[in-house]
Image (cartoon, rainbow, N blue to C red; front, side, top):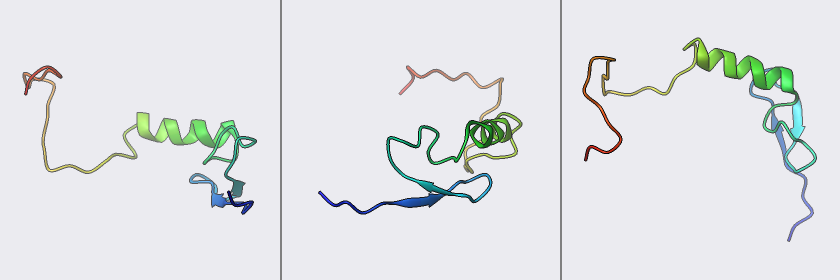
Length: 65
C-alpha cells in the first residue's frame, strides 16, 4: 500500500482537499461547499445530460422492463 497523499480540488471553490478519511466532506472542502453544490443540483443548475425526455405525465415505474 502506498503512502502517497492524494489531493483533489473542491468542486465548488477549488481549494485543495486531501482525499482520505480525515476529510469528511470530500471531495468538498467544507459542509458549506457541499451544501452549495447540493443546492445547485436541487435548483437544476446542474444536471446529467440525456437524450431521453421523461415528463411527469409519462407512465414510468422502476419495475417496468
